[in-house]
Image (cartoon, rainbow, N blue to C red; front, side, top):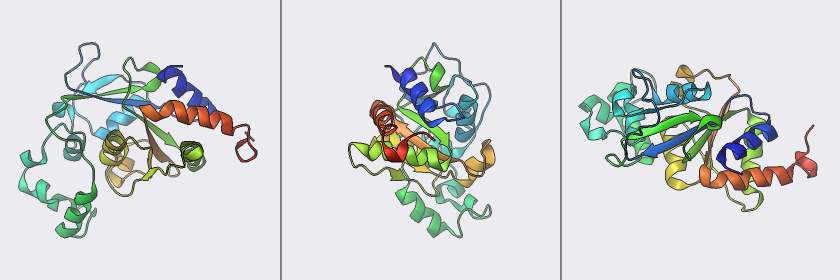
Length: 228
């Protein structure tokens, strides 16, 4: 069973409504996938892929400064001082002051700049590349079952994301840690994606997908997880 089949099985088991999104970081610009036309935010790119688009993006196609930074496509030291300090977030209501921004950023994960030239996006069902991370939008019950499937044979606890941008918490974090990550989406993502109020997010490193699908299949035969 390859990653497409595993993704289809997970979608079937959980009755997920939205397409799973495949993400992959590339050291070169691929020649077999189209480049995104124009610019968009990282979270918007995830939305576009969930709606069927297949494309890659470089720093030039990234509209959000955070998206380029956390995805490793641009060094924060290249940004103007108000961005490096986080001062631009204060009038937007994201943080009260610069110290709060800086304390938050100390704990946020970003991919080292200068390594990758592009990030590939596709619905998992259409991905012709092996993904690094699978991004999922689900309801709370579906997300809970993914977390139980992750713990079923390992006892592992997933990473819980808070107010960090999803380009960090749902992309860079699972990529760098290899751990399942869940969260509610930050305010920027919720303003730029077509999400219901009750939607949550889960990201699964591809290396964990087969195990989670197998576990969830077994769990469906047990009392607590039998389909209603």
